[in-house]
Length: 174
Image (cartoon, rainbow, N blue to C red; front, side):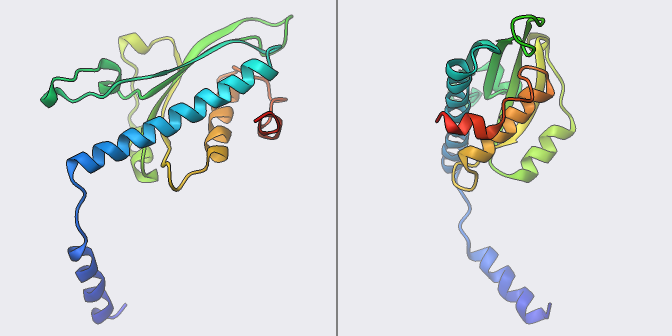
């Protein structure tokens, strides 16, 4: 790149307005709500159409942790925005019961996901969790289908659902 192009790019960056704290919080709420609604919709389909494997499934949404305003939410402080709890029989009625939860932290950019996933630790209250991870859930740039695909892959990874339940079969029931 030439110096002229670099200086023009820097000038554009300098002129861009930074997001206020309120706008950042609003975007974070939107990302969390997008993840919550998508996972809730997915669990509804699994319970209704794949009840042979999925016995119970619930989805929880944590609050906002903002000590400056007096809002204390331990789950959100510990890096959990959405909790997916499941009780399943992946091999059908003859198989063992699998029970546990998957903990998700909604992030607005893929770089934030990589940074969060580098050093994940479980607190005492999260010991029943099979998986804890950050997930990119930008409500503008990510589709519901791709988000459902990642959640289904995670469920298969922790042996909650069998591999016969595919995204195409789930989407057919939406």
